[in-house]
Image 1: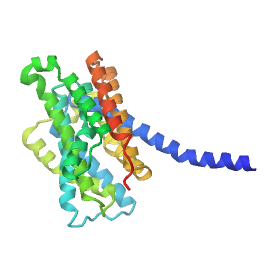
Image 2 (image 1 turned 30 degrees about the horizontal axis):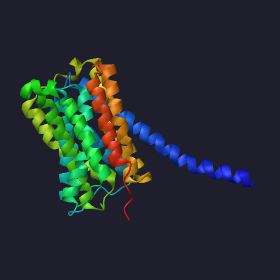
Image 3 (image 1 turned 135 degrees about the vertical axis):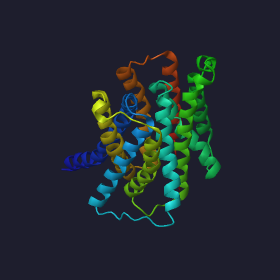
Image 4 (image 1 turned 120 degrees about the horizontal axis):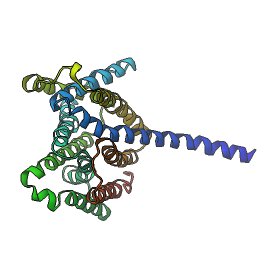
Length: 309
């Protein structure tokens, strides 16, 4: 009986771990596969149109889900400035910059630069939150910078400003995401539910995208879109904008923030691999080395974080 009880206890303890592992794998696959999906969409749709469609869909689906769950949709006046600021950096700044960057550089390299974000968040947290950086974390920062130097090596520098435009925009995207993340931490405890916060952030970010789409872009009619565009857009809206975001909230609730962010380690790997397979981008030694250095940097920074006392 004691042996059966012990086996039952081990089984019940393993189920939450298996569930969290499944969520981490799903998040990594959905967000990683989104990189080539966005590149396919950009073959037919300009950047403002893509983001207008994505942000509007995200706002409708997330707020509808919150309404169905009977979550309060109101946000206190104290939280609105933080909601707007964090939304503009984490959603608008990051997503818009990644769209423009992918038009100017290979998607596989863009994905690698994007996930130097934890390194920049560490430096911004030291500046804005007063968090001490350990020797291990400095090593992670050094690995991240080494990965960038590998990508932005002699070949990119030889191309002049044209060769550096895409990486510079992508670096701005990573910095925007990092700053928004640090501001979310600086706000402290949020009164509103995370799904409600994100839904309203999508609303705020969708408004300027719709205005810019109408003013500056003339996208082709849906009847002229390629089949690959429809498939990629469906993937982007369902799996990246909505489902992965929902799974992310579920995983953060199940795990600590440090544990949940481990899932980001999968994303650049999936993004680079899928870009090579679907877009035919070459896997050069430079890209492979930069990917390894970036993964090492994020692992060193994130996997040794101690729980706050």
